[in-house]
Image (spheres, rainbow, N blue to C red):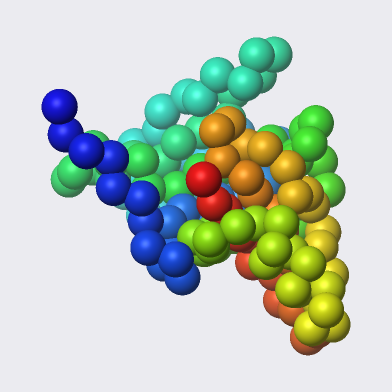
Length: 127
C-alpha cells in the first residue's frame, strides 16, 4: 500500500471557478485548454472536474454557486495548503483582510476563502 503524501504548507494544491451556471463555461474551458470533463455528483446537480488529457489527472474544478458555495467570488480561485485553516483565517483578520467563506469542511478537509487588504482573493485548505 502506498503512503499518502500531504502537500507541503505554502504549495498551490488546486484551483476552481464557481459560477451560477457552471455548465455554461465548462465546454468553453475544455475547448480552450484541452481539458476533458468529468461530472462530480453533488446530489441534485453535478459540478465538473477538469481532467488533463495527458495524465488523466483532475487539475481544476468548475462549480455551481449553490449551497455553501453560493457566495464564492466569480473568478478562478487558487487553493494554498496551510497548516491550520482556522489559525490562518484568524491571522488574515489580524492583518487587515476579510474571510469571505468559511472556515468550513469541504469533504475531509478544512477550507476558507480570504480577501487581502487590496481585495484579491485566495482559498486556504488543510487536512
